[in-house]
Length: 306
View 1: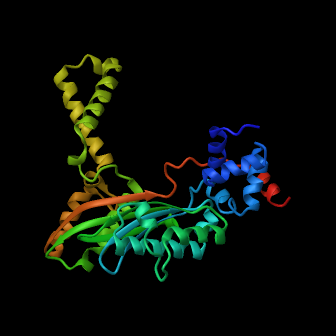
View 2: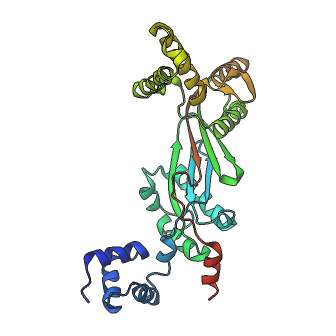
View 3: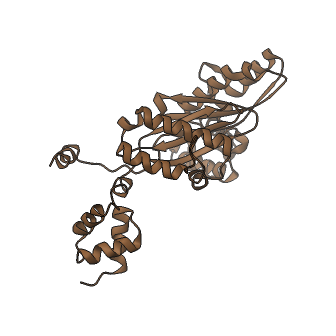
């Protein structure tokens, strides 16, 4: 039968094998996809890539402050939580994070091309080895790197959430602000702010929020009749609440909710005799935004023992 480009593409998506090999497999299998996959596996081409086609949505988000003062937060995904707890997998993640700290790659693809610690092989090559050794797909998903200031890491629930806080410190020893950094990182982990400060909220977002609040009042008979000036005042109050919910520095400090994070940071800085500014933060929740495939676990186990 005639093999179309669409057929080749479909097999490539199913296996991750190159286009030419997929075409050969389909020709050999006379267009039968199951036989084509079997042919690829027999040739050793689909042994790894079949695993690589499965959704990797577990894993860990690891935050570290390296010896060179650089802060790194990285997410590496596996297919199951079981593998995420594996010492080999976790050692791999730590090694890759150390490369981010020392080599400063531009993005994930550049990181994959870097040398793996203690070897002359690339991270991409070693990742492929880990896939075969562990038996699951592994994906380096994303990372962030802070090279300036003081970076304080926090990892929650064995890597389910990772947070990295970056502080600018003046007139204070770096080791004296670690406790504050941990507290702020825990705040970010728990409250998941969208912005660092209210000044970071765009006018577009504010206009949309005003529009929503005015629409709510328009649909409330008691509020609809109020003067426009009163409505505007209410909207401004609502925006203040929006800042408190979505902006880290305006949030109530979780350990002492009578003051904001911003005021707590200022109070600690004053006590230590210097200045502390929260410059940036990143929060990774492992697997967020990845569409997880819902599998029939019993059927999968049954298929493995046939």
